[in-house]
Image (tube, rainbow, N blue to C red):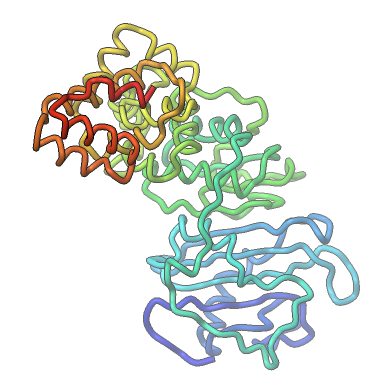
Length: 402
């Protein structure tokens, strides 16, 4: 356990011990990669945060992400029995380090890290764990959230849109708490100026004013009223069309899709959220992003509101005009997603745009257009190259799309 510099992540394990590494009895640090002073620093910061929810031993662990100025921690907390067999104790493994490395997104990914210690795992002699240099490749990729989360996530996002700088407590969701946190943070990053700290599978929200999102396993017997929090019981709660659409966009495209419409600066009050909402919607519940709309159509994942919009004369015209401005790379991405027999306004607009670009390029110039499409649609390219070599312009290209 030596001091080090740079973007390292340190580890601490907390559990009941007759004599912890700090000389205390009870729940305390029993293994770490930190030197004594660093361990004492983090033990003081985390002493009220290390406790798992009051659930039966064997219940799933909770994940918490906490920020302390330029430092951050990710905790994985198991409810366990203590050394005498009494329930209500905790086994908590913490990763601590610079906040630049432990971002909210990194914390969600580290929740699926394979290096976590579980209750009952043997600890190293003397409690000496290894620090490791931070790297994005060390954390697991985020899993694709289950679409069953959509309704409850939309209820939470709806509250974020109405109260963008608040703290939020979600009470007893039916869906997976960690997956719910992933969707909410994936959508809500950019709302409110404070970091998106979170805690899943908690018993109460008392004294947790620094944590923006807390997900409780059940309605607490006693609730803290010292710091106002937006309390949300998401089961069956209504949500505005924009909240539903943002969640649907994240479930379809992940963070990459959301970056296209995310606020460039934090939105801290409802008036700013309303101005942003007006700018990002083509119609209520329809995002003003033709590429997101087109990829959803190509995958057959349009919402009823989006289908109605595309069926309107206004929607058809606007989408066709936007697709005409797509760079080749985005048009190629849509071609990758083509489905046999699909006929919808977006597919028709893409087909027409393919015809137009090939006709406009003509002759030798068409080869440059085709080269940019070669890896995406090799069969189409082969057919068109033969046609161009014979001196024809292949207007029937769209048939391969359809």
